[in-house]
Image: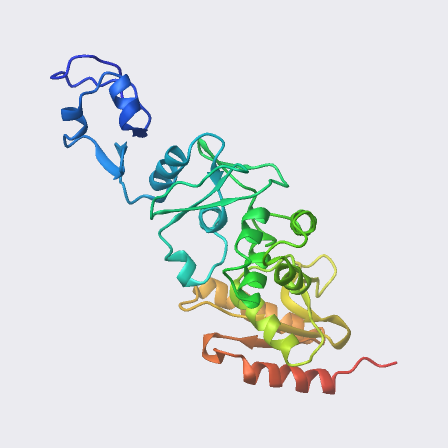
Length: 304
C-alpha cells in the first residue's frame, strides 16, 4: 500500500493497492502528472502498479481489475501459480486466464483470455485474489492439452507431497460438466492418472509401460525390507513379481544420497527385489526400459 498524503510535491502519497486503476488513483487525489511519473508504471491501458509490470501476480491483478467484479483467475494461470507440471508451450503463455460470471462479456484485451464457467468447488486464494479450484482449472485446459499432458497435469494435482486436488474432487468437476468441450478427453485421461506420483517423468514412464500393453504398475509403493527398518517407496512396483521401476532424474547426486541409495538398493536386492532404473538417457520413449520391464515380468511371473 502507498501511504496517505495530499501534497503533490510531498513524498507522501495517497493510499492505494500495489495495482490500481487510473480512476482509483484520481479519486485518491493523485494527478495525471503523478501517474505519468517514475513512481508508477503502466500494466495495461488504465491500470498502473508500484511493482514490476511483468510480474505474474501484478498482471493477474490488472486482468481482474479490467474484467470487473465477480471475476477470478482460471485455467493455465491458476495451474502455473500452483506449480502444476505443464508443457513448455503453456508455461510460456503470457496471457492471464480469467473466469467471468455467466452472461458477462469478456474484456477485449490481448493479454487476457476470458472464459465463462459455473464453479463446482470452492475457489482458491492466491494472496489477496481468488482463482478457481485447481481441479476446475485442469478441466478448463482439456481443450488445449494432449491426453498425455492432461494425465501428467492430473498426476501433478494428486502428487504425494503438496497435494493440490484429490481424485474425488477432479471426478466431481468432470461429472458436473458432462457434455462440455474436452470433458470426454479429460475423463479418459483421469482413468489413467494416479495419485502419489512425484515427477512428470515418472508419469511418462508409467504411460510408456501401459502403452506397450503391460499391466499398469502400482504407484508410490511402500516397502520395508526388514522389521523396524526404514520404509522405502518405489516410484512404481509389481509386488507379486518383486519388481520395482524407478526414474532417476538426478544430475549431480549428493555423495551422502548416493551412499544411501546404494545401501537401499542392496537391502532391497537382498530381499529379492529387482530394480529397473530409467534416466534421461532413456528418453524420448523409454523403449529400452519398457523392454527390460517386459523381460523381467516374463521371468518373474507369480507362481499359482
